[in-house]
Image 1 (cartoon, rainbow over the protein chains, first blue to last red):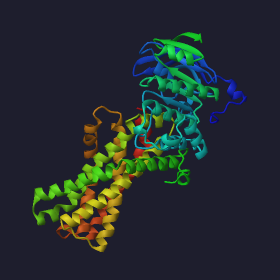
Image 2: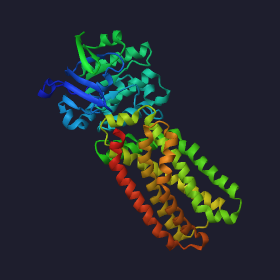
Image 3: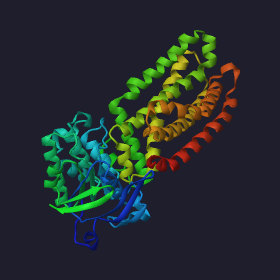
Image 4: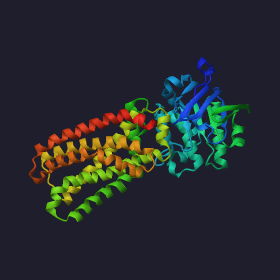
Length: 228
Length: 238
């Protein structure tokens, strides 16, 4: 996946995510209550923990969508307490929905997302083919695709957007066995190409085979980090 | 749109984003044909139903301008709903914000696409008024009518996009949108109706009497275009 740079400049040596005692508040509830976590470039990190533990908030904090109330937080070298918006265009977050337009074709969707960062036509074609969406599938409208194919289209959008940090919230949800296998291979491929992936999942058995580290989040704090 | 043409539309600037979003919205409309197959027939049915209900050529001729803009307003509600339903169906609006796409560009793009569709709608409604209600149009009246149509649709598109974005994340947005939108667009309804009366020469009103109403429409369009472009980002983030 050539869209993600991974040279040996100093920027690549800096952690992609560096949180220290990070606090994020949803309304008046501290969804993150002092989370500390470091993620390096090219890692696939599994976030585990019970419902309401703060996994999604942690992802949204890394995406610059939730304000850092207290503590330190740097993502891709950007200080979240100063300018969290500027990190957004370098991060790709996919939750339960894919962010696709059902009336447009696969290629049109990927092109649209690629164009948001000024991707060239060749980058868009590459993203489509890397996700195995070229040929007949490329010209099908998204509304006619299976759940797995839609997820791959959304991921192709991330590739076309040159996202350096992929934040995926329950990416296996709603996919059949084949779709899950496809997704896992895509994530491995992305990490090999230099992207950093953080996956929040309840499906520990499957996701732990994919991840290099498991980070357990409980009550808004990182409780345990396990190398896999 | 050819790929060469699309290459110009990149979302790295506000104008680039606006063009990208507008092109995408119009492409979605071309594919789904909601305007063609649902909104335009709905607007025409409203016009015909008015004709049945009033059942008098003299009355119809007198109220034609108001009926045109009422039908346009009701149809605009459907179009605004549809414009944001496309964005929220699979979380695309959230993705746009989380991807750091400039909110001002999203607003302007969606407004431009909505305005283009409203222009088609209003043109058809005016033709329907001429045919069904026997409204008459002079050359001077045509100029006033075109200017009125463009200014009023710009205002409607601006306020529709702003309130569509506001209602997009809310529960019961289908019923919330008319409640929010209809009171706010009252100045457009009044101004556009008066200007159209002048263009049609209804009740002996001269064309020159219609131009001052354009001032109201222009102020409304500028006010909501500017405030919408500025407020859209914080609105989506909240």
